Length: 484
Image (cartoon, rainbow, N blue to C red):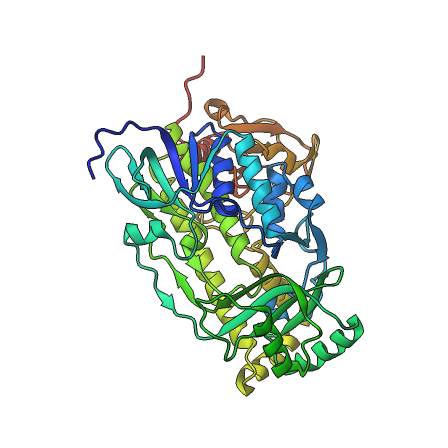
């Protein structure tokens, strides 16, 4: 493809306007990056599948001033019983001001994030499928299915597990194909709730992959093995659900009026690379896994949050040389860990004697607070520690939403900038003040002299020495601007 005749119209083109693409677009717009989001669908999906925002994703919403809007459309549920649906309460004193699950219809969170991105100035075009692209030293030329060509400096594939961008990029997607199929949907039931609850308790003694639980007034979420139900390429029907319910429970519970019906497999794959030149991958385009534990949407949103400020820095011209490389270095291991824990959870959901014995043992071990806490922090992503080198345990971790003299810490991060939180009141952001805010606050709820937070809320430096701070400001925020 000859790219020389196309001027660069956009800084970043994003393929896919799901929650990951919309979140990334918003993060880029916080830094005045020209963003175009393309989506192959003519309109957002309308089926009201309920998804859960875990603790870390809720924190990210708070960091960008979105939590009030999101929480108003969702439903809080207690933290706990995440890992393989083992029924244990959350451990005491979880390290977050937002230690709960937020259930919210997927179309709602997608629409909220898209509105947020558009409100910040992102452009969104629907019914636009990426058909090809070519990159050179200066940018990427993107060809749409109708033949139109667009030019940008970078392209990011947020276009799902069957990502066109990933396939065209030639990035391998190794892992395991699907071995088991599961039906999942939401529908109404025609029998009393107590009758349903009793039968579900009985069945789950042996079949951990079965669920028939309330998600609203008269509405139930159903998860059931899809044994003998057609081809996965064919959408399931209400009769398919009734058939499997009768086979497993002896009744279909009077199931009727489905909200949405789907099926999924346990395919587990991870892209070998998240970046090739000026083309990057995020969300399901980079990793797929079974939905057990409810981590997929959260993992993708957190990818976007990690990538956004780094790609913006590259576009704006102040990124240190290796900053964009840290996206894969940090997020690829996180995804690998999610894939492993979903593999483990799927095994623990098996009705075979060996996995059932392992599940009983883990259930006992989770009575130990440290075990329960470790698994909760893994599923909710608040236990992530990026490798920033030797230092205190807090280095590389996210900081909880603490009290500061101006209110709450996360309220200071709405603009997507770095933050120097300085209890000594002797330090300065100096020539980086165009990228890093400074709050001198001896009353901040910290047990260290000062910290430097990246725009994603991870602790990049701890200390009280200005020269050492300057070195770390350069590492993460590039060269200082000339003052005066």
